[in-house]
Amino acid sequence: MHHAMRRSIALLSLTTVAILGACGSDSTAPNPNSSSVGGNWTLRTINSNPLPYLLQSGSTKVNILSSTLTISDGGTWSENANGSVSLDGGPFTNQVLAVSGGYVRAGQTLALTESNGAAYLTCNFDGHNTLTCQGGILAYVYSR
Image (tube, rainbow, N blue to C red; front, side, top):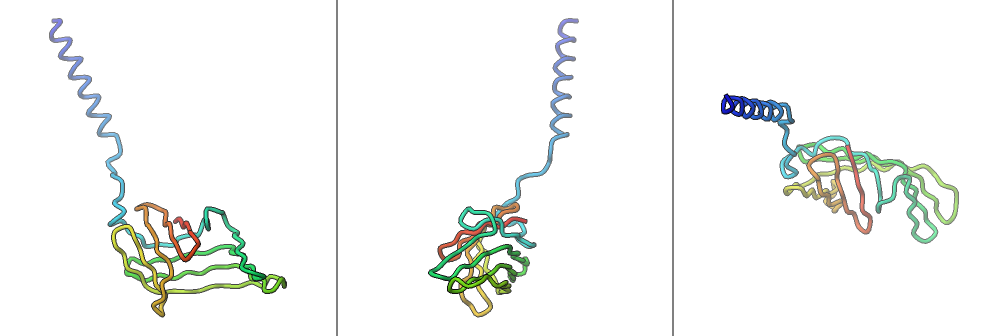
């Protein structure tokens, strides 16, 4: 009887482990090299600072308030940014930036170019909801 009791406890333990294992998530982490990058991406930080972000060059100041980068899985993108500009210490005037182009993807890396062929951003996609991009001396983080 002692042997039968141990066997029953062992089977019960294995059954419990199997049931609990089956209740766990079957999802696996997305592969950043093949996950869809398509969608609307909201600019969260510039050089690790949250928006609004003030950029100054000489007497010119640019205040970036918001930006949305829209990427299609078909190789095109567009960005609409809102901000304001002050020239030579004058008052800030509202500005809207609208730019678009194409991109080439190599694994996790996206190279965005403007419609005229000029380099725009180089981005790293984490496979989930974050794009970390570099454009000139500025680093941008977008999320969706």
